[in-house]
Image (cartoon, rainbow, N blue to C red):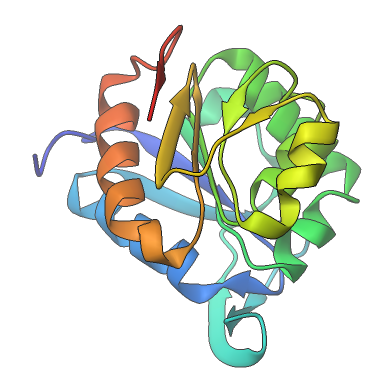
Length: 189
């Protein structure tokens, strides 16, 4: 499996307030499988990470600005959670456009915990089956999604998961789906 993602570039879109383990563990899994990852954000420098939304948990270096990023430069997109992170992304027009364009491209997009908030703002969840952290499930339903309570859900090119507790299943799924790029037309849970 070490070379399953060799040559693939994965964008990780995050802002201040990102839940550390939801960026760090998937990134490590993707890189172990051979992917090159890049952290994109709405500002340069570093983004501040959190643990359980409340405790400071260090920083991540930003590799590029989402405003300058092109969907064509990446093979997949990861949207980690934390409450503050997607709340900032969903009010940034460049972040929302990038997410919308990525989903519409058919390339795989994975979101965990509160990460689907940006998918909602991008207008891409209607008619899709997703999961998320419990507190945003009403938002997903109101945006037209079918919401289920499962560790990982794959619907077409969208892969969603509930919380850090689901990271083992989420990481395994994104590595497999990003490698195969075969998410079109399927719904699994």
